[in-house]
Length: 307
Image (cartoon, rainbow, N blue to C red; front, side, top):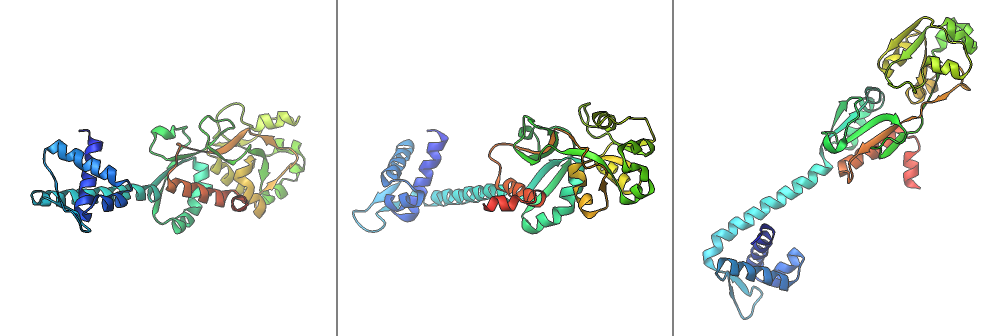
């Protein structure tokens, strides 16, 4: 007898012994009395012994033979353990640990400052950040979801958080005041240009690319470079120079007035977006995280959901 049939038979026997009839056992399990009877009789054939004494009438027409009373208690206990294990597996999908693979810039700007809000809303979920720019396979990785900055059409993308980001020159109001020649793009040749080395690939807009696109002479002037986008913005905020600000990275500073877009009409598309990648059939805890993330990151997301 195969294992599945064996377990189904034991379940039918345990319920019948406890409730006293095939009909009652069938209602509890969700099958027909005939199915319960077939499972019980099949197991009796398997062991070569009649398990139940049958009465002609009464609410409990079936009574377990006394030889099996101790064993049926063990079977009942085993099914209780299985039921608890099944509930634990279900609870794990709603709570427990959720590991999110996220780039350093997104972690520092979006997730880390707002993790307390996630804890308040979902205290049963322990959020773990795996901070990395590496492209990962979410089907074969300990992270359930990856947030990545990549070209549109990335093969693993499930959802878009920020579409086709743009770049443009930014500096602080104070730096602009101290360098009035920046009122025109040509004045950049007398400023300190801050380079972002984070994004690999020659197609990502950099200072030379930006100047050539808008027919501005590019000189190898005073410069500094950083290998994280957050460091680039920090350097700009400290009045070290002018950077090509990534739209998503500087939007809050532009609104707050701590940074200015020097030439609003001179913007370049990066062809890159922030994507979410995750395996099919996401767990409830992952769906909760995605919904929460969009609610804090996409301004009109909740409005969209309610329409």
